[in-house]
Image (cartoon, rainbow over all chains, first blue to last red; front, side, top):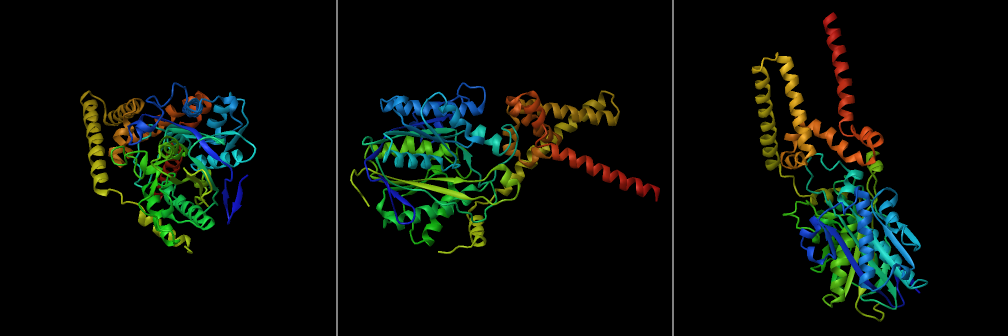
Length: 340
Length: 147
């Protein structure tokens, strides 16, 4: 049963692991540096559906299907689904879960949703549940039409803008089974440092990521050097640089073992994504398709993964509100026993 | 560490790479200039065909709008705009793109509540304030004329 240490870190006491994970993407993701790590790439970004929203739902369904298939499990073996996306009222998640007949817990954490879902799944699997499915997705086309401009509208993007990933990731989190293990979860606080430019979300989210990460180090009495990889969700070039600066100020300087999913998913120069990737699907697919498999293959032993979210809406931006950020952390390890 | 939001805003601004001004300006000059040159050719064509100057101007605008709408429909205009920036935004072709692109995008929500409602989401403010400005200009012109 999970217990809290320090201010906000939950230690997973039992053996809880990732039984399987899967990543789904589209053409641009397939052409990126991590293209080969995706389980399913569909060059048709509509995924055979009539609308972008349905396409996003389809991506979630495919990610869940693939993750279950890899674990040789079925939907009826799943006790709870934790899922979220960026669309109004989280329709991509709800619609993809409607045929499952599994208790569904819909989440909204903006782009922080994947770590939120995995974290909650781990806590549940450490108590009442056996298998939990954590899913998150985003779609460039459905996000653009909701937050920004129509697709065919002509305009230039500023250098701090990020590209919403058309991707989904799913992880089956199980009790007494699976590898790597989840050792701890830190749910973050909402941080707002007055950034109001919605084209600079990396800067809006970096303080939240720095706050959650430094709090985790304080709670567990560990340091950045104790981990093989510390990876944030979608801070992009601008946000990742700010993150390093903030962590230095907080007394936990980040070294070569720090990276950001938003910088890993695309080739920033060649694929013209300005500051990098963003969206729930960014950290969901990079963690599910790339980082978790590296832990499984033994290339990494311990990883701190943070998904980062900008908690604004088009309404709040138009009303002149600043953009609050949030970050949730999941600590993965290949050690079965306690590490804290 | 205590960091004020003013301090952080400065950090945030410093972290953003500079806009490539020279590249963007030359792109806008090139594309904007090309669109205007095409416009001039079209205008001359209509004048040569015997249309009066006001009629030729109107026909020229209509041709450019149609041209831009078709390019938007084929998904080409936004690619030109990515390079051309302000050069594609300012001429009348940019306005046509701003009307056609939401019409295409929101067709999935139906012809009335989707296309019909959303068609002016970008161009609407331009129309509203353009009409208001022309009324104000008209009144000023009228007052000056009486005096």
